[in-house]
Image (cartoon, rainbow, N blue to C red; front, side, top):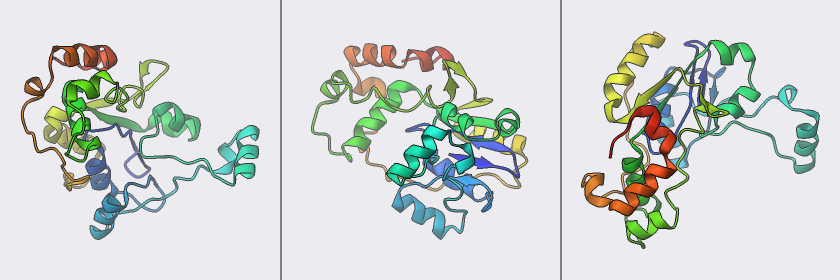
Length: 227
């Protein structure tokens, strides 16, 4: 998750949507005054090697705490913080309302059936222990960050939701809209563990199709995804 003050944008990071690669690319245009959340160690090294802005200002200022939160923080000796998949509701709660209301908020969404297949291989590091039919039936693919990241009380709050399937073109449009000085160059982040490159329709059966359709009904309706 990134809050950039120079270019006035908030990047809401969903899962299995090239979010880390986008986050690293956007870091090039960030400064120490921006909010940049930490990522995995290996990916942080990629960002550092590129010379881009690393984690900054992700600890939430004490003045944003409620009295109860401050008391808890003192007892636990643990600060509240922004994380890379912080949902919109959480972000809005802890930043200046003017920033939330005026900055351009964007995110990326992906066809849920494709996203579930991607998560299946990611969770198993490319060597699944369970058939995907059993994995889906047991609910392992039912909690991939998406709609709840870019909505509040069921209402979408992102100004733009980019389609993963058309990411290059749509990122270029956002780059131009934000006035970034150059196109985003996406590094490869979070190594690719998926050896099976078949289309998700060839991997998922009818039972999996139906379950994903129920679990991700909001994303499917919003983006008009098709199996």
